[in-house]
Image 1 (cartoon, helix red, strand yellow):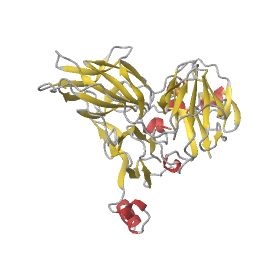
Image 2 (cartoon, protein in one colour):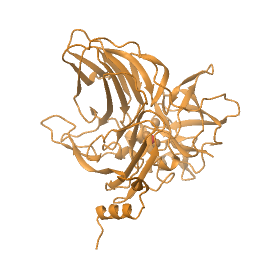
Image 3 (cartoon, helix red, strand yellow):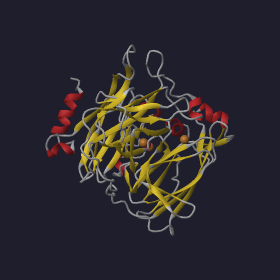
Image 4 (tube, helix red, strand yellow):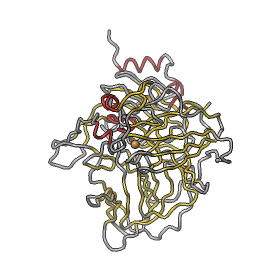
Length: 457
Ligand code: C2O
Ligand code: CU
């Protein structure tokens, strides 16, 4: 008799193999499978995508701080996969990195993700296997952890921004291993959606206060965000509240970055307001806010900062574990050779293996960590971008701060955009034991060599 997936799940629960099932209802499934989505207007048909629970982007997972996320990933894809919970501080074993924190989940297999959500904020989830293909095909979703006492707003909305490279039939271009994308700006799409919708809209009232949780789920596109008929603050970046909310005028949102905007509808005449994407080819509306009905009776007052999560403060930089991370390669970079699988390899052979970049001379995840830090130790990493391209460097398991030339600290982030030829330094307290990736979140760059890791013991 061949066991069907259903039978397997039932018997796994019955034999106690699924720990969360013991508490009652059993774990909720998160199924990754092929599906279709309406990414384009008529007369185009639906687009074949890869979806979580049948939708692209996947369902918003929303819970209160202190709650538990329990999802049994069921892999119905034609490839192995995992789920990485981007930006939220969780146990290393739940981080979803194949070959580092778990084995990749084979087609037809499943894996239980189960962790406490101790930090409030806007996070997201996506695969960490062939992420440049799997994320691009539609596998991403928002993970929202609400504060115990959220700020007063009229609407709290997730806006997951993404771009797609579609052909004339509105189908996803099968050019995932393009060496041009890998060695240049990454895979930039020709079609932008918000929550999978090419003409995303919300209906609001005048003077409404909105909390917009922006997630950039695109592989490589940097969004340059502006407002029309709206005014307010940036309240949090990468899930972590700003100590002092900043007036929101224009915001650069690199791949994987998030921003919580708290905005009032200030438009007094027209019946629409907009969240805008500024593009070289012309600005366009990401989200259109249709203003309808009577105005909100009274405007809300200034906003207070969101309550901080308890991340360990950086007490000082003395005694820190330090490293320098030098980025090389890419188009116009002139890199001649790098280490590939432990062997010094010339650029022609690197390109044949799909590599175009190196971190500290190594193209791909190195054998040895960038550094090893003791639990509780401060870490400083100097970032040197010796390439002609910007990079969105993402650290797993921790939030860091940029260190200014004068020693001042920037806001907490998990992904930082380092401009071409730029220098920077990050610092953080290594408070989460395990092996953690540190990679470019322009996913083609990560695939082509821009990945390393560090160890916290
Ligand atoms: Cu959002 Cu290593 O990833
Ligand atoms: Cu990069």
